[in-house]
Length: 474
Ligand code: HEM
Image 1 (cartoon, rainbow, N blue to C red):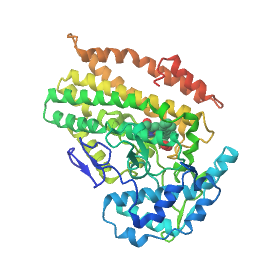
Image 2: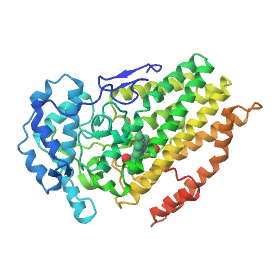
Image 3: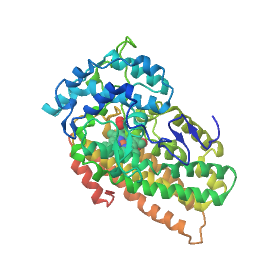
Image 4: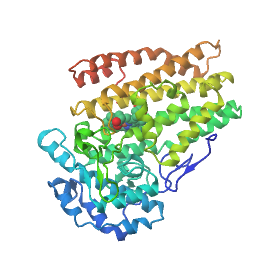
């Protein structure tokens, strides 16, 4: 493990102050022509396509068309170009999820509950899929980075930026605007990640060099970028209607944690004899909040429970270059001070820096509180199925992380409270406002958990509490 470096690359992603967590170049929209039988299936697969309905709309059709798909194992094993390998991984990921989860989807359409998935992948999917996964050094299942989200966007107007309304998916399941808006908003938020990553690297280097002015500058940049990200996050309600989440949700389910659908796991024909279980794509594989948690010290308060184990397990579901970035980030934070960034700011008497750190923590809280509201509406109000796509028990887990954020906020407030601050600078106003409002945040969560912990509860009641506390954030 090293002190944080200025970039972490795998040839597709290059985490630095220029790309943040987005790929270095725009992902390929289509596969090279030699893979056209695969591309054709992907193009005709969505439930809705412009001129009508696709394979997934018809019971069993996807299984039928896959029978005539050639096995491209030889071709894929000679591929050297990372962008082609990524596009192949994306294609086989989508096809594997569509192939296995189509029966669950059809059952859901009829009954409102998810039916059993098909748990055998035929050789012509399994072998090339595992081959490209090995080349990328990831698990062979639909993931967030290379497959569903960050490696799956194209710009509608190439001259414009990455706003969700200017983005489209290269490969899709439902083909409806709610799926596109949902996942493209993740990309939209990540368009601001260059400034966030740059500010994290810049702060750590400045703290190490005892450069207070630069530390303040980068912490302020981090705080302001988180504010922009939070304002983009609120667009979710427009980008994807909450009562349409079930149109595509079943297709992004993972195998691990979803035994009700997959039983012992999925058999990859011609690869492994025993069934395999991998986790599903989830926003929990996104990098913004985990990076901010490590950087700001929230991670110290993660409870020692299954949720924390799950979040740590998800690190393995990220590209290797992002895993290395997180490891170096964690060791850099520890190496500058045993109490991390807040510890060294305190030692360097950098009060303004501490106020911005508190501001950053409040933005992490806002992100999570807004996100908790997504979970209340998009999932709790829509379905009785209590497992998330990543395979976690939804209701009890998300609030744990919010408690962790508030604990670190209390810590910093205590540190700042001990100073005898006389000047009335701008940052102090930030501190005062946040300190005043923490109580309300804690009370909201407590009241919501009281409702949620009842045997039978109404998700509307949980949601309405946000308004009561004036923290509805949408
Ligand atoms: C309608 C929108 C969303 C819904 C319904 C949703 C749902 C969920 C659920 C159910 C989990 C629990 C873990 C699991 O998947 O098993 C989760 C975790 C998580 N999601 Fe989302 N999510 C949404 C949007 C986003 C966005 C836009 C981001 C960031 C770009 C994000 C980032 C995260 C993170 C970091 C976690 C891990 C838990 C934490 O650290 O608090 N999510 N999400």
